[in-house]
Image (cartoon, rainbow, N blue to C red; front, top):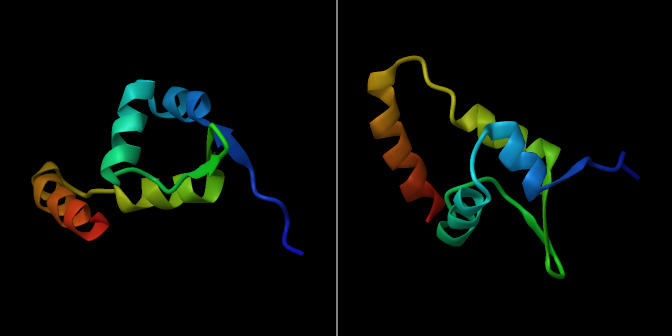
Length: 77
């Protein structure tokens, strides 16, 4: 069996990224944010999914961001 993964609450993620809980909720609704687990009424995020999402958001210039974001959003839908 693999090592258990670290699970974070939406409060943990909001604090980590400095975003509002409503932003995370919007991302979940639109399918734009990181993968998440729904365990009953609880929303949890796996650490490795957060890391993967962070890596996918890396940019080398500001001119890259709009075209890359649109590609990412279309790929997520």
